[in-house]
Length: 101
Image (cartoon, rainbow, N blue to C red; front, side):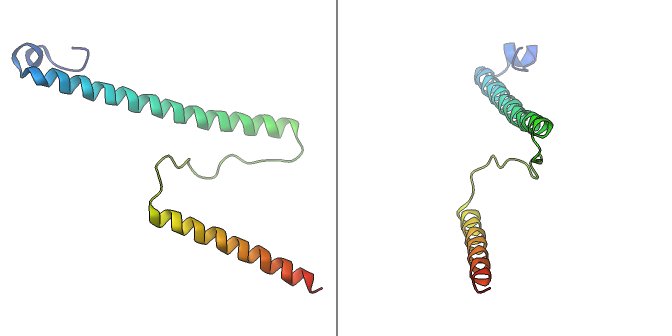
């Protein structure tokens, strides 16, 4: 009954159903645990920002977008590399531009 099975399912249903319910229950618990862990990360970040801003003149902001918890695809990795290359090129161009003055 702990796993969400009804009395009838437990006593009169397929015996393998109990195992499936148990596995589903454990997956739900694992998912809930991960959700709470991620929530803790957000709370920790908020606390760090609040404490830093309370005691330091240099202000920092709370994260602008959610944490990326899923592995990136190869396409996303390549897009990130292209963005970083673009930033590097822009920075190098600014150095060259200011070096001419």
